[in-house]
Image 1 (tube, rainbow, N blue to C red):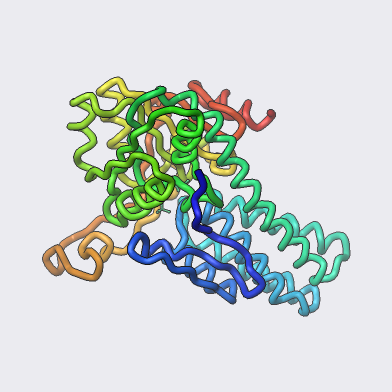
Image 2: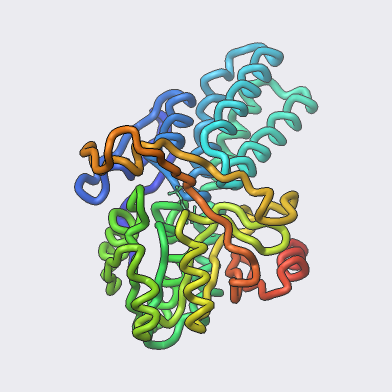
Amino acid sequence: MHSMFITVERTPEGVRMIDQRRLPREETYLVFREPEEVAEAIRDMVVRGAPAIGVSAAFGLALGASRAADLPADRFRERMEQLFRLFADARPTAVNLFWAIDKVRESLDCGLAGGQDPGAIAAQIERLAQTVHDDDLESCRAIGRFGADLVPDRGTVLTHCNAGGLATAGYGTALGVIRGAVAAGKKVRVLADETRPFLQGARLTAWELMEDGIDTVLITDNMAGALMRRGEIDVVVVGSDRIAANGDIANKIGTYSVAVLAREHGIPFYVAAPLTTIDRNCPDGDRIPIEERDRSEVTSMFGVEIAPEGVGVMNPAFDVTPAEYIAGIVTDKGVARPPYTESLAALFSR
Ligand code: MRU
């Protein structure tokens, strides 16, 4: 079972990504030759999903470092600082973005402190970015192995948004758990929430699971409760953009409603994410910055206006699910169980 698409990669020309805005109707790839274009691609959701955003930022910064490698050391540092600010402004919620920026900054500081020239530092940052990519892929596979046990031998998994290969370097987090279960020989059916307003579920999750031949059923977001009541859902698995130290999680808007419904119906609700999604400096979900996106995502679909002109609109892209609703957090180092303050901290010392 192998997904054939490449979410993001570094090529000799620049940073190459599948254009997720056009899926599933068109499978096109874009090559970005300047770091500013990569930051814009993150903002515009050519690439999205917390780990994929982090990997793309690492590649974008590596591209920027290589382009600036001929500058003297002080101007090289200034240019990199400018790029750190640019990438940090791209999207606020996915902590993997800030994690990747910090990694590149450490590499820069270390190189400059050691008296290395910008060319050598840029080469080091390029290697680091590739490692960020490769490690993410490995982490997702580990999440799949740990998470497979949580899925019944024969059953239906509900997922929300897209936490798949498209949202990571490949394989996925929530979809990694599903892929892990299928690889272990389980008979899994997936219900994919369409995920208004950007339709990551309908366009991306449904597409990538079907590419893998996994039994996939698309539902609209407002069907989940009724289907739980009918006994159609055995387990819920979602991804996350940021996990606070106490186990509260931010994920795509609508995740909280699914978690509350799951609790009401006695269905286990799991979150799958690599350790890079855990923000140990964030004590709880109330401190997670929630991105507010453009009103046009709500008032129009594929360029067609569907709401009266001038109507008030809210468009928070994420919500917070409190830890008390979460049966377990599947990471690349194992499954954390409540109480999360202790269990998540313990994972970092493994
Ligand atoms: O706005 P998006 O599409 O970037 O939101 C993505 C999600 O909410 C995912 O569930 C999350 O990033 C986890 S991806 C493995």
